[in-house]
Length: 196
Image 1: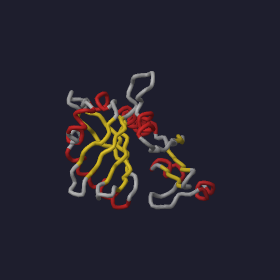
Image 2 (image 1 turned 135 degrees about the vertical axis):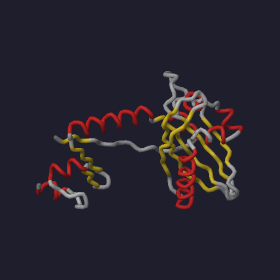
Image 3 (image 1 turned 120 degrees about the vertical axis):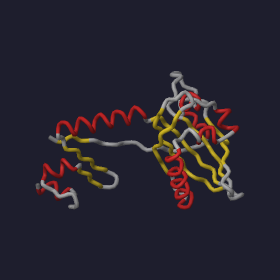
């Protein structure tokens, strides 16, 4: 039996007003969708937030004011092994002037361990600093749901496939390859699918 999983959606950055709209501020719900931020990293590596949406406290357990006063109030919530990974990905994104997205576990001050996705795009400034326009989203529930799906797939021997319409990339899980008799190193494309 095959089960299709699809991913949709892209995140677009705009001005601060757009960031506030994405973070859930100003709406009727009162719940944090995510947190918009802007952080300036100086040539010597010093970090300071120039903007943090008010949803910071609901998402991280740290007030926006505390984050603005000391960037480490947020950075130090990221588990240490993942902090070094974040810095490496940021450095690569900075050198290539490209957006990055990373999933990291954070340990909130109240002791809750949560998973967050950080997505940020660099903008070089005249003084050599880099301004990062970013958005942080709590993805803990998605990770739990993904793990449950993985367990269900393993228990039922389902095969998964995914097709990215934009790139034409086709992904088949190990079980789908077994169902169709395709080896782990064989290329999978539409012609291979039709021939099976």
